[in-house]
Each structure stands twice: as structure tokens, then as C-alpha cells.
Image (cartoon, rainbow, N blue to C red):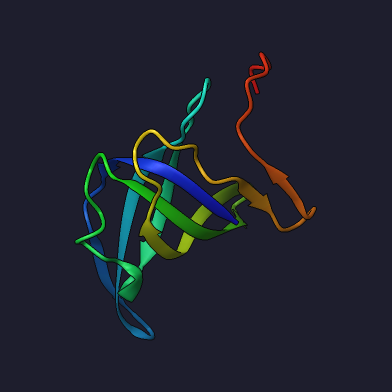
Length: 115
């Protein structure tokens, strides 16, 4: 899936050691364009973290996967970016979001629906 949105917040860089060695994770908060903007937390792992691209206010295009997992009877969902690129210039329309599961394309429109 893909999303173009404005970076609104960088959360602290997280690092640690696991069974496969050292790891690092950067969570970012982005906000979509449109009549009903949404905020999304996206995780960027390892060498995909490009600090020169990650500037608050910048439009970025994220290619990502969504994954849910169960722990102690509760479900948790992660949005994990596998590619981050500079987005469209300010004032241009956001790229459509592709839904690979149903092979449909969603894009912003001028209808009055709240969802």
C-alpha cells in the first residue's frame, strides 16, 4: 500500500539488541490531506530510516505493510514502512492509496461523506 502525507511529528528513535543483533526503529506521525484529515503512526525500521528526509512539515510518500498480531487476547496493528520518498510538492493532490487486498484504489473526492 502507499500513502502520501505531511510529517507532523518525529517520535524518539528507539534502539535495542535482539537475537539477530542491534535494531533501531523510528516512529513518525503523518497527517493526510482532504476534508477529513487523519493522523497515522508509521514505523520505519533499520536502514530505511533516512534522517535527511524526515523533516516536520515535509510531504512524504510511504510504501508500507499493515500487520496485526494477537497478544494476551488483544490485537495490535502496526503500519511498517518499507520505502520512504519525498512526496508531491505542497498544494498538489495526494497520491491515491492502493488497497492490494481488494485491488481497488481510494482517492480523495469532494463528496460530503464523513468517512
